[in-house]
Amino acid sequence: MVLPGREGRVRETPYRRMAELIPPLAEAVAGHVDGPYAIFGHSTGAAVGYEVARRLSAGPTDPPRCLFVSGRWAPAGRRAGHREVPAFRKEMTDQEILDLVVRLGGVPAGLRQQPGLLRLFLPVLRADFELNEGYARRPGEPLDCPVVAMSGADDPVVTPREMNEWRRITTGPFRLRIFQGGHFYHTAALSEVARTIRAELDRPTAPAGYP
Image (tube, rainbow, N blue to C red; front, side):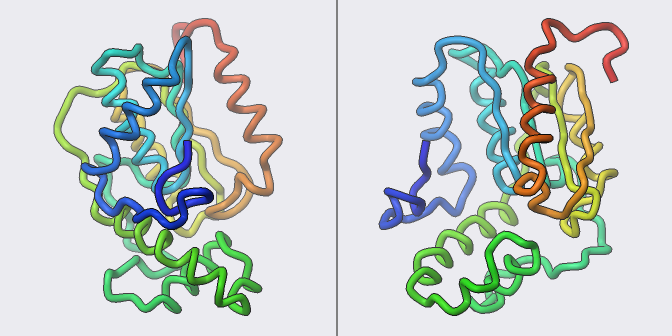
């Protein structure tokens, strides 16, 4: 599924508030669920995936087989104050946002020389930052599905300790996986990440003592 502002929906206005995004997204996901399924979300997508899992777990579908969250501090946790990159601010200029994303490794530095592409990318980048920074977890019951938190060892946005706080959002099994790399570790370690996801999904049950 493609969200507004991306790919074939690039002319549509992207979401800036989680409360507006989650209901239609969860409905769209539910329409494609006809068996066991899993959810993976990276960075802002980790919060989105978590909220979709919460909504789907409340019915009419079954909970996800597993929720994979990556590269973002836990909803109930706090960001540490030792960041190597500045936090997003609404008053940031387009250039400051671009500089921030380039520092994180999410956009090739050469994109600076392509103003046409920049005009397409920047509105959705700004909207994603607003979506992430404005998100606050609403009270509710924890999930009961397995949760696997994944992160880059050198991620300047979130520490392994902060990723470990995701264990608080489920009563089910939890596992923390750390990979070599920064915030976008998964682009370089795609095969390793895919193997990890497959191994988790291949677990028939959560055995006693699951870490």
